[in-house]
Length: 311
Image 1 (cartoon, rainbow, N blue to C red):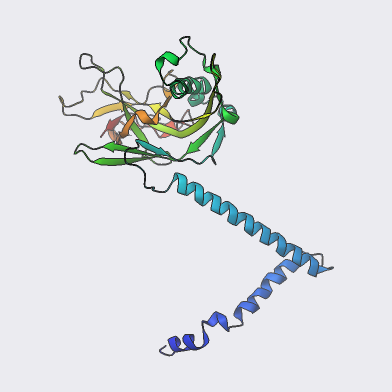
Image 2 (cartoon, rainbow, N blue to C red):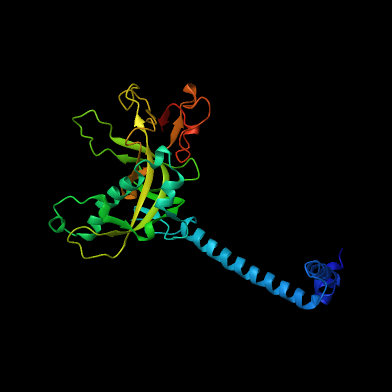
């Protein structure tokens, strides 16, 4: 084998002078010949070759677009550490809300999906449109005054959250809806030191979205769409029967409410999320669905456990 480097330097690599590549190319032409009618086959083979070339170009272009979308939405990017969260800018994964609700008719997760979504967006579009509270209309607006561009919302797979750790450093949580890393915690707005309310609420993220929102309420003349980001979540409820907290030196225990309850599913502003949380099933009590059959395909409740601990 000692003569191989010298031979390569003198004659080049073997594919430079080997006839193997040319001989193998005959198979390509013969394969195309089978797709002709054996009459004027030269012209037909040329057309087949041109068609294959165009398809390769289309595939290459689509691959480049997919890579750009993944780079925007799924790769680690350097961002300003002062930004609370990062959601991709791509609008490749669009979801028509009317078709979405129709396709999942009967699923508890889409019960009042559109009214709940637009009520959530109504609060945020007003904040973007009116700089001061005095400018906001005093009369309450119905959710029908909120419109989505093309009636679409745009899906993302990843949410990056920046937060301050206990040792005053910056941490980052990645919420990915296709993995088990999709649980978040927010402050309980009703918590005070004088009541028995728990300090935090916990939720499982079902979807990460943004929408281009119009507000057609009374008195508004700015009809330009505004980008609003939001999370579609399924809330946990705290198990009050289990002692928890620093006093009892036990982890918080939560469970999923019944799917028929009014506020099981909702929408959340990513800016309100503190950070992700680690949810551990209480394996001793087993699965909530003993038969393994769930009610909601979107919530994937067939895999629910009876109780969970917040780590």
